[in-house]
Length: 185
Ligand SMILES: [Fe+2]
Ligand SMILES: [Fe+2]
Image (cartoon, rainbow, N blue to C red):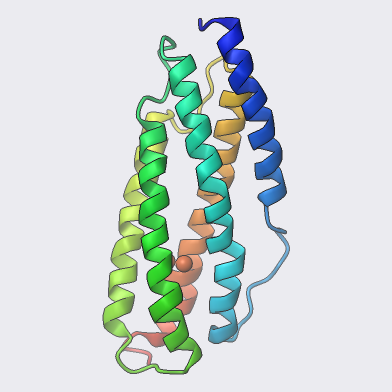
């Protein structure tokens, strides 16, 4: 068991992060628009901006939990580094959508989008591989009986992030992209 003093410090950080993450949850009853151009704008504000707000707090919390509870068998060793890497990977991916693919969709430039969409789908597969690593490291977000508030806030925040990321990717893969791929464009 970690020293109480050290745990108190990250519990305070955990309360702040939990409150911040709660405030960053988007409304759950907002429906995506049918128009593809409007849908790209919706995805940016509903999911891209949300991930940018969610991940830094989660990575910081994970690093704190790993540092303070390193002697607990269930500690998710490597989670903080994985989340830090995901910040970069998601940022590169979302920038490609925001600067190249989404503007082309909004211009109605349907021919020739098959190749960039194939790259986005491959990026999504990479994100799914990272999600699988998160679930493996955390035993599918299972908290130990001794979990402090920071550890609890971390897994609750991760559950929200993973649900948002899954909904985000499904909206692009299953609703937006098929409208612009060669067979349908
Ligand atoms: Fe996206
Ligand atoms: Fe995407």
